[in-house]
Amino acid sequence: MAKRKRASGKKLGHDPFKDMDLDWMEEEEPAVEMAAEKAEASAITSEPAPTAVPVTAVASPPRPEATFHFPADFKWGVATAAHQVEGDNINNDWWAWEQEEGHIKDGGQSKRACNWWENAEADFDRAAKLGLNAMRLSVEWSRIEPRPGEFDDAALARYSEMLQGLRARAIEPMVTLHHFTNPLWLVDEGGWENPETVDRFTRYARRVVEALGQHCDLWCTINEPNVYGFLGYVDGTWPPGQPDQKTAMLVIRHMLLAHAAAYWEIHDVQPDARIGLAHNMRILDPADPGSRLDRRAAKVADRVFNQAILTALTKGRWTLPLGFGLAWKLRGTLDWIGLNYYTRDLVAFDRTQKESLYTRRLHARDAELLDGDYGEFYPHGIFRCLKRLDRLGLPIYVTENGIPDDDGDQRPRYLLTHLHEMWHAVQLCYPVMGYYHWTLVDNFEWAEGWSLRFGLYSLSLKNKSRKPRQSAQLYADLIHANAITPQIIDAYAPQLRAELLPG
Ligand code: FCB
Image (cartoon, rainbow, N blue to C red; front, side, top):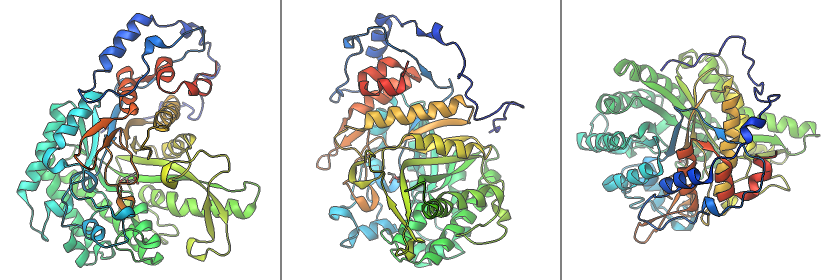
């Protein structure tokens, strides 16, 4: 993919609309047209309709109006991961981890998950009805290579069928090659602690692209090396559950080297491939901005979690805590960068917390919190991350963004405010190419089991039936309009009017 070039002399970070006279835009759209459009967009499924407020019922005294348009070729997707949706992934380390007591909240297990291995297509239909033109999904290494060097053609054929199913519905697939799970045989051989895993991953990546490249050219090598390293090897709440910081850094280094090696290997098979990596970024602000120690603690935490990986991948340099010196093999191995953004933490200096580099995480006193202590509701964070990623000069995909919200009372506002922040980034010419909401249907949320519900659709664990939450219709309306419109705001989150349409 041609990298988007900046017009020379264009000052990024400058708001092009700031001093413009926009009064002419204030004329209202005829209500009839809007109602017709709305009716067309709302025929999502024969499943229970989400409870949207009909647009025509919204009173419309003269009020500030503005429509926040997205580029015509913008990608609107959802993101998923194999282990969380497929079911019966019995040959990987997460399955084994789930079988041991105490590892998963409420004793949850992935079991049949969302039954995608048998019938992902039912959810592809839902995605198509929402109007999505993109979907991020992952392939499961333990299915594709059940024994070292032995590839399962039937598994690859099933994935090929899925990708064709997406294409047939005009949905562009983005395929992730590694999303947290490892074949058990790989774990037996030392997993990501073993430097040989770099070659094994590269061989697997090559085989996948040879088999599936006909139906996909957008690849995400590895999902969130930082989360993988921290939860498995610092926190120890994920497999292999062996807290040891040095090993954590070694594992992340190997993952980045594997990404780079796979990058060249994939391009060898498919020269036009577009290859990136999904990076989880958390906003880490000082708890007390007036305290030098807190500022320092936040900076350290940010370097460790957010920056070191970006520096390694773009500058070809290991920085602490990953190490020192050159990482030249990593340079130039991103055609795009993926942002997974959810929330922010405040960071305080705490001399008792040696294990976490003398830092302690907390929430702002007035912050609205997400379910399950997942973090703060902090939409501006997505803008701040995009601003930072813009400096890399690469196309950006928001490869994940979403909220655990079973009763759906926060998701409409979460979606609208985060998309509004993303819109702002687009206006400033940050090269944001697409957005993948996490996620379509509630799925197996790792150590949180089934307790955190991220879906636009809820899932019944008993009979696996799906029911659209109100945000499913909201997302469909946003995609249909390719914009955030005042009518959408009024219909789904009128309390945001003052914030999004200040007049
Ligand atoms: C991300 C993971 C994804 C899912 C969401 C909620 O960090 O990549 O698999 O668990 O969080």
